[in-house]
Image 1 (spheres, one colour):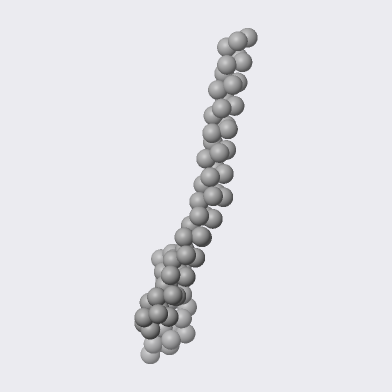
Image 2 (cartoon, helix red, strand yellow):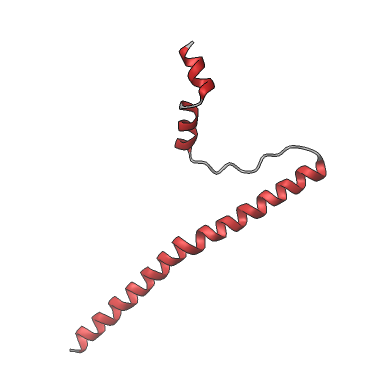
Length: 82
């Protein structure tokens, strides 16, 4: 009986660790990433205003999104038809 209890305790510990990891990965990491991105974009905006230059904020699009936008862009389609 004690073997069964110790196995259940280890299983419970493993499940708790897995759920903590999942919560960290799915909730905390995206929110921290959002905060950093916001701070960086604010710093870029401040630099643009003070130095009177134009530095674009970071582009965080995936490659496939950019490809899809180019494929369906009206100017690109018109040029390809010509």
